[in-house]
Amino acid sequence: MTGQHDITLGGQRVPVQVSFDRFRTLRLTILPEGIVRVRAPRRTSLKHIQAYLESKAAWILRHIERFRARSEEAPPLRFVSGERHAYLGGAYLLQASQGERNAVRLVDGVFEVTTLFPPRPDRVRALMEAWYLEHARELFARLIRELRPRFDELGVARPKRLTLRTMTSRWGTCSRSGTITLNRDLIKMPLECVEYVVAHELCHLRHLGHDAAFYGLLAAIMPDWKKRRLRLRKLALAGLCP
Image 1: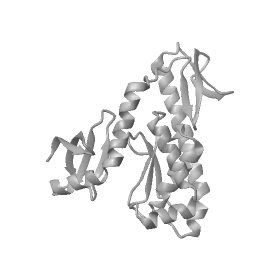
Image 2: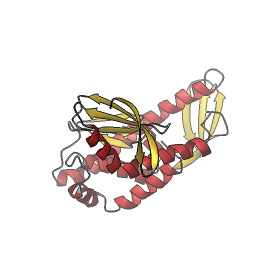
Image 3: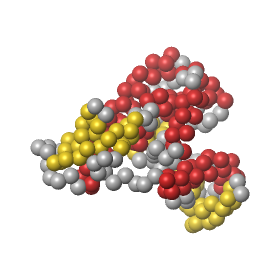
Image 4: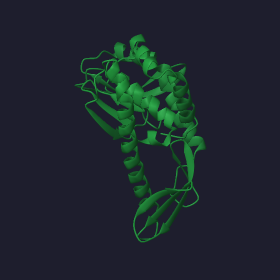
């Protein structure tokens, strides 16, 4: 089944790319163009892959619809003055100008970006992305520190490592080795949503799957997690990010 195929999910034809590797479990990614990418352990049967995709049909279609809505309604950011850029749930005006140094500041609801040379969009974008990454790394690490005592009380292992990367269809992951990976764009969501994703991934340090035990632990740590998840999903479907 290696290659690209079309399957039916929820009455819709969905393009699926399948490849095989040394993974222990199936890995699923939704690309912005609406293609489902599956990376499966070697010798995984077509029947098993089909059943897995069908079990994830609602999740897959939700993300495909989100990408479709974004492409139709939300014009891509151009990183020029006058645009609004998201940060922790807010939308802040961008003002780019030439100045004495390359810098980004968020002052009185305005992203002030200065560049040594005329503020071409590619320069502004690079500075903005570096600013987001720095603030995301600081915030995510702080939230893990703040949540850790609650997990310690319940005897949950501590994460071995925190990494950040761009992801098209996930807010975070937790590996068997204890590495927490968070989506860089999560910094654009409201703080309560960021806290939810961090708590969610920390719960995977004890329960890798999404079974009753996992959700029981999540509820013990964050009783209002359903409200936070709902808000996150609504914002994502509205095209805020990622």
